[in-house]
Length: 155
Image 1 (cartoon, rainbow, N blue to C red):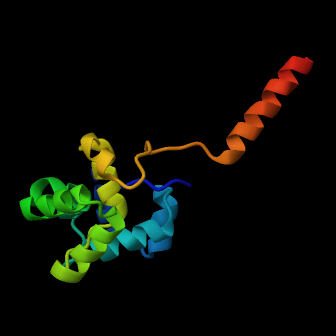
Image 2 (cartoon, helix red, strand yellow):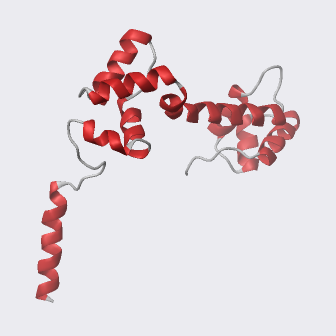
């Protein structure tokens, strides 16, 4: 079963069922969702009791904050200039991420820096040590491709 966020309607159902039904397991069965989803929802969004509308707004706020991590390079001028300066003198994104963590305590994953370069600042690719495109074929792909072509010729 794939994970999906609860909708506002489901949160209102949960609020009502929480007041009328007994256990979280019964609520989960009735709503046709996992019992752990019910437990997690109640644990994350309970202050004095569970309120659907406030739970939904808290959830939206948390999701927005989670997406902000990738925008650190765009919104923080100091971090942006630090990354730009170090990339242009040949540092790797892993070195930059480590130095940021050690000097400022700011945690930015090296993969975030790579994503930023490949999506927002393509001109910085030339400054990377390996000036390759983001995605490369594995060695096995060419071998499998040859086999397919040979198989087509035989048919």
